[in-house]
Amino acid sequence: MEKKYSVVIHPSQDVIDSIKTMKELLADKVGWFNSKNSVAHITICEFKIDESQIDKYKQKLFKICDTFSPFQVYLDHYDSYENGAFFISPNEDSKMLLKPIMKKTQDALQLSNLIKSNDPHISIGRRLTPESLKIANHLFTTIDIDFLCDNIILREFDPVKKQFFVIDSFSFNGNSQPEFVQGSLF
Image 1 (cartoon, rainbow, N blue to C red):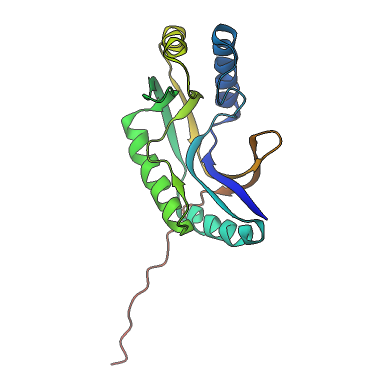
Image 2 (image 1 turned 180 degrees about the horizontal axis):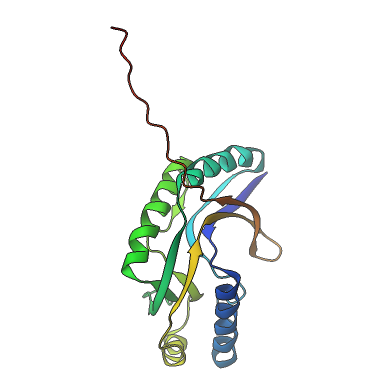
């Protein structure tokens, strides 16, 4: 059976809790909105595959994550997209560290139906009306939080709850990939 999966970076539990509080505060002002109940995360990609293939993709994620080294991510401002998404954005240095992780992870999966994210951010709300976006911009003006990025999370979509749930985690172990060196017989 085909299932939907996503690969994400979860911030620390403290940051997840802070963002949940922000979402609840926004919901008190504007009512329900898309991603209100979603656990805070930075999306790397989403894809659909037959569930019988998931172990193959877990192995690919393990191999690529094994080569990554942990690093600190600094979230320092709010921003929005024209589609009504209001989000927390990392500073430029953190973006420069996150983007190669995202790209290498996407490339490692080798899937043609991959829905890729190339702008690292943590959504507060999606598909907000212009009025709700204005309220969000007034509610949230400054932010200065950080977390250690030391793993990638694989999640599966629950079509009943309409939410993703964690099925695996892949640690950053800082192991460099052995380079293949052409030997010489003579």
